[in-house]
Image 1: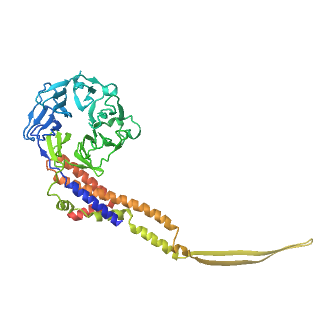
Image 2: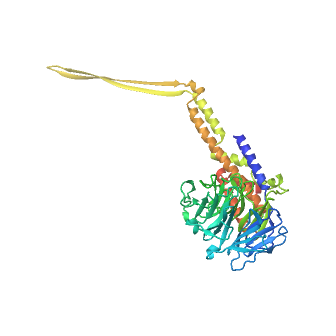
Image 3: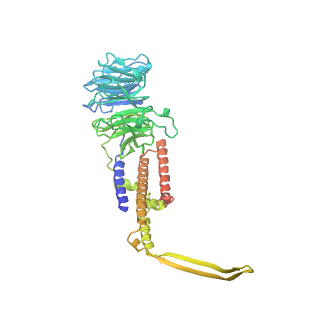
Length: 515
């Protein structure tokens, strides 16, 4: 069991150290431009960056050193929700806005509106998919399609004709499969939009059904975003108000991903990298999913309310939000992160091995307990079985005589007898094997499983608390809300460790800090 604990500790330490050193250095490249919602980088020239904002489209041709607004659209709603190049023509730039869909054939120099709805809901364009079969445009009032690059449009029938479209996911490797995330569910087409079926929502049976949770009605559940893994098109991810769901069979069956570490359970945006790494945006920041849990990447980001992410070919991760545009290289690790950084945050903490031993002792699941049982079982066979018996009897003689002329009865003396015995017996075969061993073996297996569960939980909580300390240390003093959130989480983890160790963890903290 000790070897198990040592191996588990080393594994968690290695994972913890690698993740701690992967803290991103965020750069504010928005130059004071606020209210950004979308980002796009030219693949053949990464110096050119486009950003969709509430006031139009900003373009930088010098790697975000300077910006200019290239969107001349007039009207009250200039908000740009989505930007995309045409896959077969890198000069054709599409912009889904609050006032229709726009197209530029010269990378933003000139614009033409190619879609205008009949009302303000249809005018609010939220998403766009560009496929060989046509254009698929999501609006606040349903899904529209065009087979002639925007010259004419057709509104989808059924629920997709009125459901608010949140985003559209597709991949050019399999253009027939299209996924639409709507306000009332997820819809899939396997034939380039000819037929649609609902694959996720409140009325889907089986594992995809949204169950009532914590007393919350299903009406509180809502969908936010859908994404496809480009390396494995069977893998679909869905961001919802109750965390992130995954499907391994093209949205047939859904399972909830662990929300451990996500801080804010509601996921608002998803990004799957070229290496199939999943990133998510929640109200608490930006997170990466790894080792069955979420790790925050926005500890050093002095911004909240992130709307979208974008990853370019140089591994630069862009975050567009209400406070502007930020960039960090996800392949970059800090040079000064190493053993010294880990030691700095561990110096006031009790040793993990001591915490594990305290948890084992408190739960009374130590291996010596089973060893003691086995020893006592053998000692029992060496001791005899003692039986004591007591016997007592009493008898009286009577003589009765009767005749025609006389009769009489005579009572003789009372005869009393007493006896006792002692018997000793040994089951010498139990010195070799006893039936009690079978029961002990079963209890030993249960105890090992319980001990492993306790060690796993204690180790996870210990290093999660340590990681939060590092994140807290990297936050600025001005970031009061995030500091308070992480401080509360640290207190929660401390209380959980105390519950598993009978208060040992807090006692050791006081001893270490002298408080």
